[in-house]
Image (tube, rainbow, N blue to C red):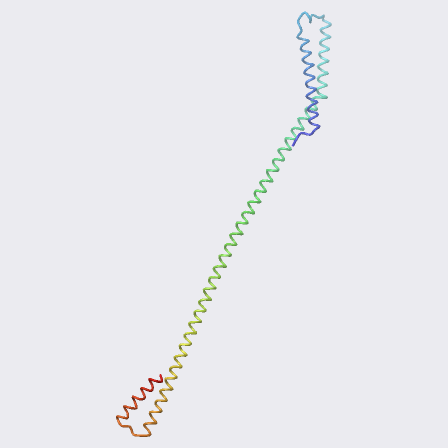
Length: 203
């Protein structure tokens, strides 16, 4: 921020007045510092000079008080206000920067938490999918084993049934042959061999 234009004009005016007063003061001092022979005045002249000097001093004081000090004070006050405004603006911007930094940090923390949560959810979903795949594979394997066992049992039952049927047929044939004729030991051995051979061929 800059000092207001009115404050700058008052400041320049005050400097001009102060310079003028200093010039007048220097002139008066030079007059009083003249050689002794030039200042050999009468008592009346000295009194008059003292009165003139006093009046001049009072006039200078009035001029300074009316036209110099007030502008100087106003300029100083304006400068002080400008500095105060600069400090206030700096403090405000500092506060805004701190708030913005805190907001960015909060957003960053929230984003990190969201990413961590997403990673955890993905891990849990992957674990659940893996367990589901394993369970499905186990289920399919168990079903395949059960089906194979069922087919084996069925094949066994069918084989046994076939053996039982063949055995019954063989026994029936043997019995019918025994009934039709009397069997000699040689016939008995021959029938047994034939039955065993037939059973082996059919099985």
